[in-house]
Length: 231
Image (cartoon, rainbow, N blue to C red):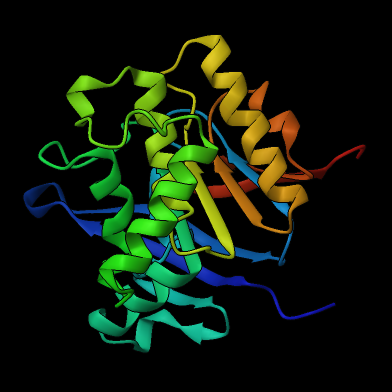
């Protein structure tokens, strides 16, 4: 088996809550995420899913333990180097879309490319292609408040794919969508996986996790169990 694209080794995450004392959100988490797999991480509210998303996506560093993204230990990286690596390797799709309200759809998709040094000409060309692929070719210059929820999520998907990342990390990607648009998002993630992308889905939706090859169940900040498709 090849080296995993993301390796989480005995990770703990603690937050200092001041007078309330420390809050331990993740406890002894170890996961290998293989290149090209479709993994779902699920669990009830308060189980640690949001913190797991931040750890898996290298948005946050562990209090103890190690997190490796494409073989590099994020704990030892400077934030500027980590941001560059994260920008190239991981594309994020969030429940709240997280589009910048003052930018057009085109500019929102171009931004991650410009952050890692892609020229404006090349960034524009790829952004236009991605938005066209998602049937938004006639919405390039619309700002988020001029788009429906489903259109905003498609812009967010295009943005996630802008740097052609190896990993697509989707956090409750259908939570704010109607069922038809939600199905589109799920089908699109499936197509990305079939195309060779690593897909990590963070969700509490028991139906959504059925799309994954492997499911990790969190409870009280720990891995309660793990199942694979058909097992």
